[in-house]
Amino acid sequence: MKALLVKSLLLSTSILLITTTCYHKDIYDFSELYNDNYDSTKYENLNKFDSVMGTNYSLLEAKYCIKWIEFDVECIYGNEDLTKLIKEMLDLGGFQYQLVKEKHDDSEKQYVSIFQIAGKNYEFRTSSEGDYIDLEIIIPILEKVTRDNNPDYEYNISNLDGGQVANLIFAKSSDLRQAVDEGFPCSLESGYWQWDKEWQWGVYSDIQLKQIPDFEELKTNYHQTLQELYKQGFNVPDLTIKRIYIDDIFKGNQIDIMIDGGPLSTSSNDIVGNKVRCFWDSWGVLLAYTLVKYYNGKPTLYDKEEKETTVVTQQEYQMMAEKAFGKRLK
Image (cartoon, rainbow, N blue to C red; front, side, top):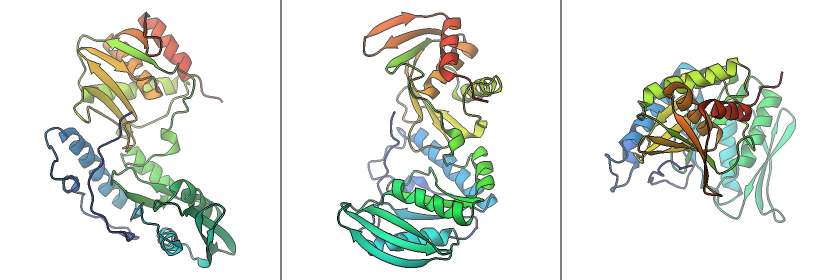
């Protein structure tokens, strides 16, 4: 799995409060985020991806009145910085709050800011051993705030790639789901695939083809496969086609599958001649299944640990994949 290119940004150490009102902003110009050595030819597919995600973000945040702020994730140098950031996050959601206490937890080595909302205290923490804000700790507390005080709404982090600048959003949950269905770059639970030991780790699906398919056509068939499996009761995500993006992002002879504009390649699959080596994650196995079903691909399995190749028939491969997908619990 390959991370998207980290862009060079000159950031101030202060938190960047961008907006807490609903309005249409200009579409981002991502090209200015690259450094002087930026190679426009090498990264033109990445530029295209960023442009599509930026356009979707701009249009849909306006359409669905999605409020947002941006902030530097490496901005915590003391208790006052944590408190300032939490205030801006709570302001984004329109919550009335009172700061109860700031302190440093010496035993846990954490800054602590305690806020009271509607008579209930909420404790926000982040490590004091670095300047990075611990969103994995902060976000669950924000989620509890919304559950307790405004359950029809939610906080989330958009998938716009801003380097060390995070984009926190606040929206009505039903509106956010609709926006994501239309291509808004944000990960929702409906886009996650519960995939653990369903497919053996390290076993690639090598699919031999007459030719590598056009990516737009492949996306259509990939989505069609997903829909067919879902309607048959298999335990796969139910996604709109606009939540799927397929391209060779880095022109590295790969099929990169991005779900919900994720900042990481959801699945990267190598192209070698007219063969696609599909990764063993869920999205990679689904790609192999699609190539077998729609493109008459000839499958073999390659175990990277044992360095062994196993020939299987198309029918055998489809049965193996369907067993791995499993059926939804009713």
